Amino acid sequence: MDTQLTHHSRFGGCGAKINPGDLSDILCAIDVPENANVIVGLKGFDDAGVYRLNDELALVQTVDFFTPVVNDPYWFGQIAAANALSDIYAMGATPITALNIVCFSPKKFDIGLLREILRGGTDKLRDSEASLLGGHSVEDDEIKYGLAVTGVVNPQQMVRNEGAQPGDLLILTKPLGTGILISAMKGNRVSKETEEHLVTVMAALNRHASELMISAHAHAATDVTGFGLAGHLKEMIKENLGVEIYADKLPYFPESQELYAEGFLPSAFYTNRDFYTPFVEIDEEVACSRFLGDLLFDPQSSGGLLIALEEDSFDAFLREALRLSVDHWVIGRSTQGPKGTIRVR
Image (cartoon, rainbow, N blue to C red; front, side):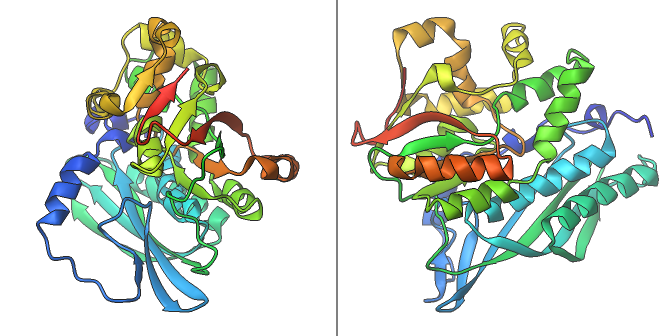
């Protein structure tokens, strides 16, 4: 069971995604089937789709899977499951069922690896109190694992990634830098202590963070994954708002700064930077340090929730965060403008 999963599979993780501009172009050319009960569908960029069953109940559905981001198969299963469940939590919904998605070659790998991956995913589902109903597997030389998840929400109470108001505080619930660390882990350049911290954070559910944002009446939320903080901020503000980010308030794994300087950057970092740089304005002082500016483009695996909250609600948010033991950092605020622009100072 000492097989190096990340050496056998493409080392991509959550960052290996098609950029939203390309997806938008594709979808514009397709007649997508929808009816009047589709509240959130394919043509938006929310974290999950939402289908109304009645005035008080809607289904929330998502699917997410990726290649190994760590070498331990059990931890990989936990992280992949937590990542898939995160889209449900970002909508303020409760996960109720899930289906496994598996790509695996029993000819190339010991079947015990798959057993451990599935055990990790199942244990994480148990933590979420969702039921595992089955799944689908495909023989593939590249290992992939994830979940299709269904949740439920009251349509009047769901949280979307749009809806932030000027002056809202922007709160992040997990540190950044996972893409950098995952790349460095491939080269055995991450300390054991940092690796243990990293996998624990990535495997943590956003369940309590979701409960917290609901109780604080958040205006908007999303989870920060493959498009990095810049990409998910852009999805949140679209062309309706601006946003100001405080570079010195950005949380990150301490070792990621040194590893960034050594050049450990995933390929999706460059994709994110190329695509989102036109929407980002970085103050000269921040730009000179490079790391904090580039941190916005680092693709995250199973990242935290990014929450837009009215400032008057922050004291109540803080009290509840302490009760639920939810880590959180105020990293900026939404502004009137320039619309569609992320300013980093």
